[in-house]
Amino acid sequence: MQIGIHSDYLKCCSRKNFQGMKENIKVINGYEFIRYKSKVLDEHEINERSKNFMIDINTRRTVREFSENEVSREIIENLIQSASSAPSGANKQPWTFCIVSDPGLKKQIREAAEKEESESYSNRMNQQWLEDLKPLQTDWQKPFLEHAPHLIVVFKKVYDLNDQGEKRNNYYVTESVGLACGFLLVAIHQAGLVALTTHQAL
Amino acid sequence: MQIGIHSDYLKCCSRKNFQGMKENIKVINGYEFIRYKSKVLDEHEINERSKNFMIDINTRRTVREFSENEVSREIIENLIQSASSAPSGANKQPWTFCIVSDPGLKKQIREAAEKEESESYSNRMNQQWLEDLKPLQTDWQKPFLEHAPHLIVVFKKVYDLNDQGEKRNNYYVTESVGLACGFLLVAIHQAGLVALTTHQAL
Image 1 (cartoon, each protein chain N blue to C red):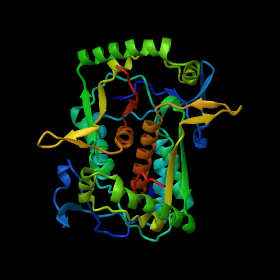
Image 2: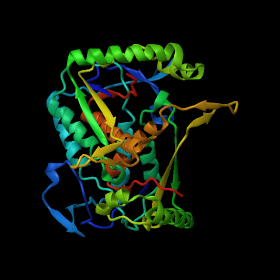
Image 3: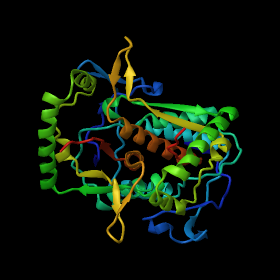
Image 4: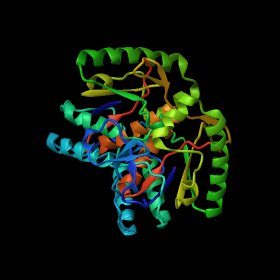
């Protein structure tokens, strides 16, 4: 990863799936790009912004208890739009985000997860793994899967199908989905919401 | 991933490596936690914040051209502190971030990368992969590895060594490092800087 200050106010780059940015197109070698306007800040301001972000993001926590307050569909969609702006291998965006809000379906997911987790805690995890989890005080019970107002289930897409129904590979899929989930978690925190990240066997 | 509004102002959670948060400790079952204070916002404000973040993060771009303006060590360390606040499997934080700023070392990395990339573009990538990269107009040349003021090389740690020099496994390592890199990219953007993310063979 390289970082620095951008050299060019008019650098362009493609972006799928974000209608609000579709004006102001520039064509380079036959490919359409959205005209890019970079912020140009002085070093003092960059320093302040980097420090303020660090302090704020370090207040983020993984939580396992959720209030019953509703979170609107519009908010959830904003969060997923933020997540899907992450970079990905060849910009293939190899992810699907599913929002689960139905109480019956959340209950089924909880039951399936607890069955698997019970087996994992009893028979699959070795002693070292169980020790590593002790400080976190987790166990096979996953009530939050039912109590959280929404679950966002993130699938990775190892391949896509093109218009002719042929398989088209995606690239660096796990890494790309990890980036998108990182964006999602920051978006959730920035909005004033909380989340639990879990890699759930079902 | 579950999301919602947090139910408890005083939820606690552990955090390594962030000295600024070490006051205000609470012990639960013998384990130290930092006392958690959640923001409690109304739905209108959450909606506005989620929308504003979405609009701003969608202006982020991957760039390949960097100015020669310096970015201070302090700023880079703030960015990496933000990245390392990401959640990870059993909170093992299975990553190492290396900052490369030395011009000679950047030149060596560029040369090693271009040698590999030249081989990849000529002989390793199949026709479909080359086609997928065409819109991005990339090739084997990686001048940005030398021109960007800093490279952040991110290593995943499949295991750690404990105080006795014994191997201790980490969990969901690729996913965890992906989350941390997602946090890093957002931190870079929020600071007013730009980055190129690359999975570089050397």
